[in-house]
Image (cartoon, rainbow, N blue to C red; front, top):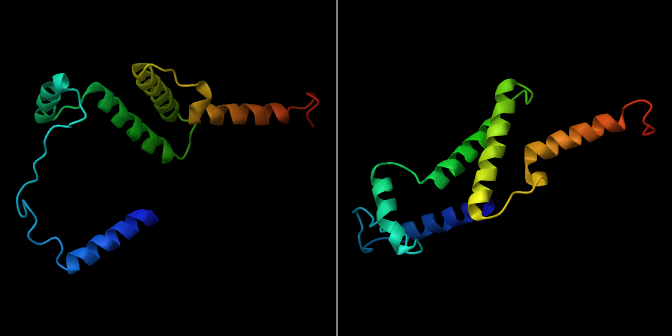
Amino acid sequence: MDPMEQLAEQRMREAQARGEFEGLPGAGGALPLDDDPLMPEHLRMAYRVLRNANCLPPELERRREINQLEELLAHVDDAHTPTAREARRRLTALRQQVEAQRGGTAPLWADPAYQSRLAEHMARARHTPGDGGD
């Protein structure tokens, strides 16, 4: 937990101990989870239907898959296995889809997997005999 989260947790526990959360409107009941007021009105009904059906909009599904792939790759012991390579390819494709949907394109250098491969390639090239780099 980062220091800001720890501080916030501490302050909330202190306020709770002082009883500052007692008697708040809606205490003991479900919170009213209304539609996002920042969402365009013409999309609210469609998103409500998707939410009630336990479905995420395609862009959120892509973001969730990106997070899952990043987590997977962070815990992979051997980054050169076929599974890891496929996960990196899928991650790159998903990131490009998200960027394309935003109307932009992700620069190739922004991809951590590409950065890693480029650094490895440059390190090998620097240590290749006869290239003048030793």
